[in-house]
Length: 104
Image (cartoon, rainbow, N blue to C red):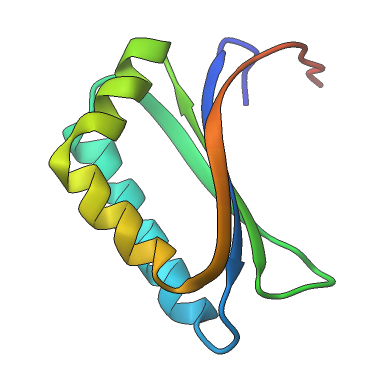
C-alpha cells in the first residue's frame, strides 16, 4: 500500500452464521465489477477477524473523493452492495480520507 492512496471506502460487516463463503464470493464479484467499471479505483481488501469468523472489514482505495462518490451513485453499486448486505446481521460503512500513514 502506498501513502499515495488518500481516499477510502470502508465497511465493517457482521455476516450471518453459515453465510461466510457466500459473502466472500459476492464481495469479490462486487469489487471485480468495481475495478472494471469505475475510474479512480486503486485496490480493495477484505480482512476476516481471526477471533470472530463472521466479522469482516473491507476497504477500497480511490484516487479521489469524486471517483468514490460516483461509484456509490451507480445503480449497479446498489445491486452489488445489497447482495453483500443481505447476508449480514449488521453492516457499518463510510467514506474516509487519509489522516496519517506509516510505510515500511
